[in-house]
Amino acid sequence: MATYWIWQQPDWPAFRWQAEALAPLLRECVQVQGQLLGMTGAVTASLSAQNELDALLQNIVTSSAIEGEQLNVGSVRSSLARRLGLEQADDSPVSQRSEGLANLLLDATRHVDQPLTLERLLEWHAWLFPDAERDLAHRQIRVGTLRGDEPMQVVSGRLDRPTVHFQAPPRQGLEQQLQAFINWFEASRDQADLDPLLRAGIAHFWFVTLHPFDDGNGRLTRTLTDLALAQGEAQAIRFHAMSASILEDRSGYYRILETSQKATLDITPWLDWFLQTLRRSFQQAITRIEKVLGKARFWQVHRASALSSEQIKVLNRMLDGGEKGFEGGISAAQYQAVAKVSKATATRHLAELLEKGCLERMPGGGRSTRYRISYPTG
Image 1: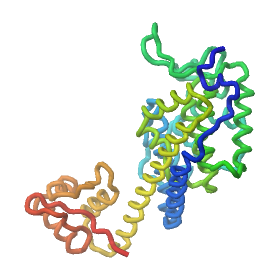
Image 2: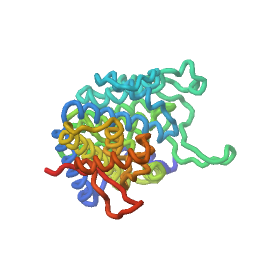
Image 3: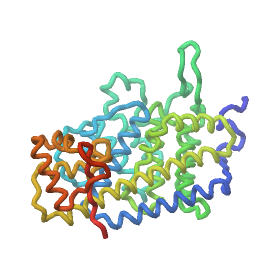
Image 4: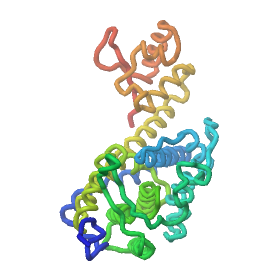
């Protein structure tokens, strides 16, 4: 057989990489990860639980979005909140799908000391497809069992002239290959000379290359990555969402997988991409927690301020940031629209918020005057 796919290499799966080339990026990742984990100690228990919920929700939703599936966010949030013991104002009905996805990620991130076994992987796969028996789209998917004998290919283009981006190892011998991966995953956790972040990158690439199931391989791969990262952090509560960072560079993700799966067993380029993406997820989590801590400090200072419900609503929206958070500042007209008050009331409210130190004027003036949050110092 001609050597075309990486799993056809004679020494597969003896991966290798250029440690010196990856060392600077790996150091940066470890430093940013340490900064993130250090910040979590400053977060109160209630805020910690809410941040964990937000990160888990983001991970689930974006992992499915990578595969082109749009989930019911409210349903997934409700499933997660119930398991985390959080009360939610959103009473969205939960579905078997959201329940299964919540089970999947929480099992990976909270039961980090539970061994990885074939039985656990098969249970994970069953959680991915709880409605398979009733869902016509999933009728051909073998749920909770390994894929069938037909070739497993990732293709695009015309039906009569498809482009094959990847072909998985043949079905024969798949049990042995998967067991070899599981054995490595368990043994490598105690391998002193293997950095936990590199271990997560290797696990991701190895499992997705095996492609052991009819469907759901990508989502299970990213769940395994979350398990490996949670084990490396030596704690179950996690605040970053690797899948969200992968989604941001979805085309780059598929491109580096395709080129690496057609290359030699030197997976340095893949690990470089993986570490860059992981570093970005850590940095985004730090930014999110800084906002949470800033919001908590703000309300601690202003908890006794006599503010109207409209003022509190606008301040919370600004403190939460994001696309609807007026990161470029808020104008009187925007305040009027959000608070649903008259122009005169909006002007008065803004003047009061300035006087109480909740807001500050941004450079500029006149009709273009904009206001931003005045964060407490110290």
